[in-house]
Image 1: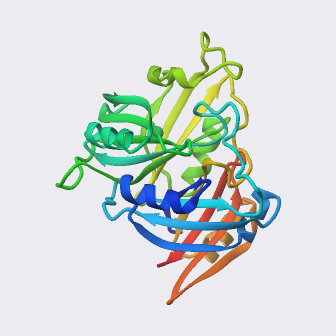
Image 2: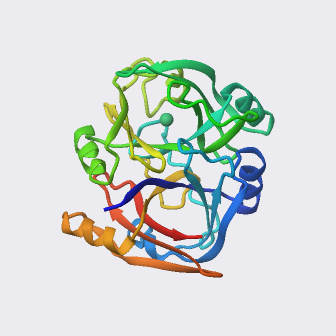
Image 3: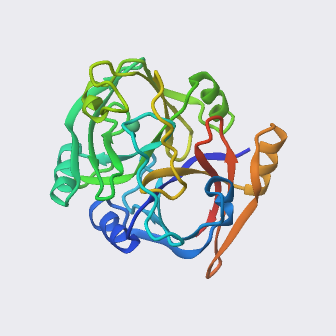
Length: 316
Ligand SMILES: [Fe+2]
């Protein structure tokens, strides 16, 4: 079966017009693949209702094979205020916690995003990951709605296409889980078979993010991170904190990164295959007619920790 990696990361925003403009102008997601408003029956199992929402799928015209993923902006329209960022979220609690963009020249892109109004969360630095000693440049900023954006250039893997400093598309999505072996086995079944790195060391530059009263800053949890890659699409970065932090899945559609989609060639075949493996799929795929022969199909399914994950079959 053809599972094709992470298709997109879903981000809740308070004003989708502002967010489309911001992500288009400053983060490289300059193509709006669709901009749709309606009832999302596909996430009923996550949201407890079929939320009335506006959804915009953005693609980067600078996307590369290592920065291929899209961003899905979501604005909840059936409540007065958007659901807030889950309280106590530092990084690695159960729930989606970051979007990582592959970029050409981390330092320059980081400076440009800070100049555009992003909060600096971690200055640019060079590092390497075990066990293959793959070099990378890394930094973090927060978008105006609080989403942690990691900027990475996998200098040990790929130096990007020629051209100016720029953000590409999504390289990976990070999310918290509770049992790494169970998560690895589950996502391996979905095509995430190649392990880029595994780390059990706390990444010290993240320490300021872990705040009281949810954490004891003098006694931070251990971080177990892995990055399983699929041969296509963006990667996943599951994280286990020990001891675990609060449940930060939040209400579906909350501000900040909150769900992700896995691309499949045939959603009907993939759904049948998941069910045959005993994986719970929530209802039948929702088909959204985007006009002009374009179509978006999606269905939610149950992953081991209840993170909000869907399958996506798209024709744009
Ligand atoms: Fe990451």
